[in-house]
Image (tube, rainbow, N blue to C red; front, side):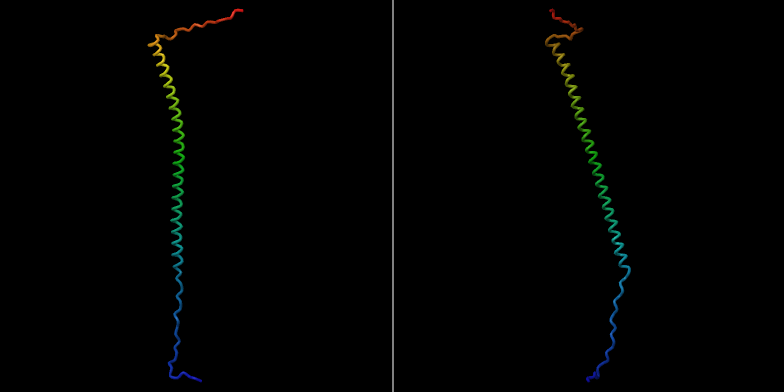
Length: 116
């Protein structure tokens, strides 16, 4: 058989052992996740608060629109009353000046009966 002559003896080479993973890496990831959850929660609360504010403003706008319509109707009624009051006074004034008419002091009523 063949023998290894003159060959250097083979030394046992120790392979490097893999390092165990650090246990601190997992808490860092968990802490980062907690931070992101907090940031998202704050953003969601902000969005909800903004939507509530917009809803309140829309309700206020609607209420003011209804009040505006009521005031416009009231103004139209008052303008009508003013125009009728002015018209009555103007007609009476023209009847006095142009036609020489005077208002009746005491009206007289006649009762007419048909004879059979």
